[in-house]
Length: 248
Image (cartoon, rainbow, N blue to C red; front, side, top):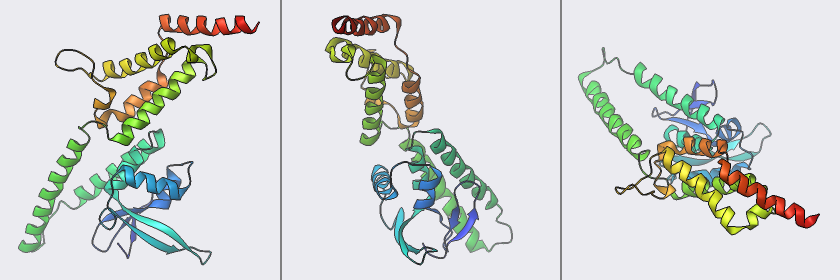
């Protein structure tokens, strides 16, 4: 993946290799996504989350920095970079993913005119387009499958954080009451299941892990916007009021 040429630089610099592959630098993607964790930890975790294969989906490299020192870098294919952006679960991640999709569309359309090319080259391009269509269908199918383990864990942790917030913190009486705590978490999960139709053939709820990957952003947004129903809000308030009376 050497001899990189910048082809787009509106949001994240996108490069083209000598073989026509579109790639990004990991450090530049990390910066634009405004990731709070350090680059070394983030790149390791995200590549693992995407099950990226070295020298196939990305390439580790050492880049000479302006300071004269070499820095560790990763040259990442656009498909993987798009998935890494999606995994950020925030507005910036969505923006970067949409930007990558627009670039893919732009360059597919610009390469559609085959006039003036030799018969052999046109045949190669037609076959390549067919392969690309198959790959796109595979991508769509991939987002139509249940959550990956890391995605399910992240959603679970998000639900836990939201539940703690709704109950007034881990030191609150409501959180310490196992019945109230279980009721709050159950209600959050049930809202996710209702919203995304996670039912089995008998109309019973499935596990939240059955959520399709294409809905992961919306699920996190639903958790962010979650409010306690009136009956649970009263239970939490009463529980926490008991603690205040005991202190008094």
